[in-house]
Amino acid sequence: MRVSCGHRADDLSASPDSARIGDLGFPADAAGDSHGSCSPGSAHAPDPPAPASRAVSAKDRENSLVSDSFVRPAFTIEQVRTFLTVASREHITQAARALGLSQPAVTQQVQLLERTLGVQLLERLGRGVRLTDAGEQVAGACLLIMRSLENLERTVHAIRGLEGGSLTLGATQVCGSYYLSPALTAFSAAHPSVTVDITTAPCLDICDRVCAGILECALVDGPLPRMKLDCARVASDEMILVVHPAHRLARASRIFPDDLAGTSLLTWEYGGASETVPARLLGPAHQILPRVYMASIEAVRRAVMAEPRLIATLPRIAIAENLGNGTLVWAARRTMTRSIWAIRRQASPLGPAAAGFWDDLLAMAPPLLALTADVGDLPRLEDNLAGA
Image 1 (cartoon, rainbow, N blue to C red):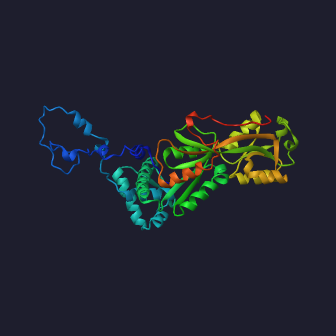
Image 2 (image 1 turned 90 degrees about the vertical axis):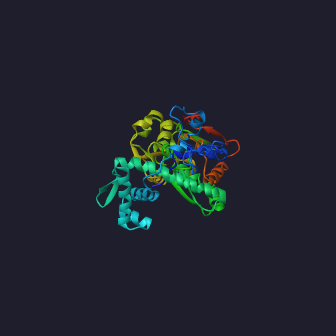
Image 3 (image 1 turned 45 degrees about the horizontal axis):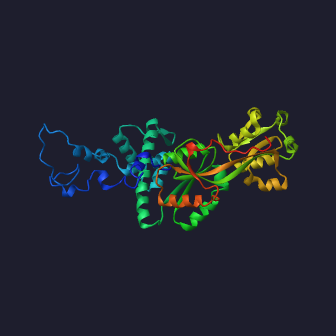
């Protein structure tokens, strides 16, 4: 389980001025106040009690800041870390091994956290455990805590110079397999001590995780959802309709419903490009095709090569060799070009590692493609239909 950075942590770092000492409840002129007043939590002696009839002054209201409401937590960071480790592995013994603790120590840490919060976080499931409904919600809040602590460490690294740390990235299957390598190679060469963790998932899932702060930045292929993301178009990807050389469409210039009789449509992810692109290339005919979901682009490519009754949309970059040697055929010259986007959370500063990698992503873009925009202003899908 990866930790995430929520909006509360980012609120304090959204702008250069938002974390000034005065903003945290310690006014800059407190030491020189002629009346000897001090802000809440100060080590100085307080003023004598004010008369009951005294109204709250404007200055008192001004000095009552958000930091005044911070409370001392009743739980420890180690309890939070232990709970997340158990939750991610769903097994006490495996969590104990990962943490370098005894099994009773891990159990005690989780029980102390449950007792402090007053809710059951885990329940037994065979030899393992799983999150309760309350545990899932608490785990989300705990992720925010741990990501905030990681941000604190990153701030220190930014001051001392990048000497290590980690980078959490996201990518769709298309981007992770064929477009991420140049930026990743450049970044790894410049920062060999940084640990990179890459999550591969459909576009919508990746965008959700970037918005939530779970992933720092990502490379995805559209269509992009309308979320608060900063994005840069860094490349174009061409999706084409392909069949086995023995399929009827291998020799067709147009597509008729009869040509698809007995054909199944292969896809490699739910709700992703392998589903949305056929809808555009085949039109209403795609609705009548039986669907077969496979684990990867490579699995789909090999299946279409082996079976004449299958059809799929695949990135041209993935099948260029097959088109050249005739083991796959471009069906009816149907194609659609989509953008490859680098995305990050809007109005949220990146850590040093993520900032360096973001620059490497932008370096992928040809000069005429480099642009930054609010996803809400972008078209839902950029496409170029040929032969439709």
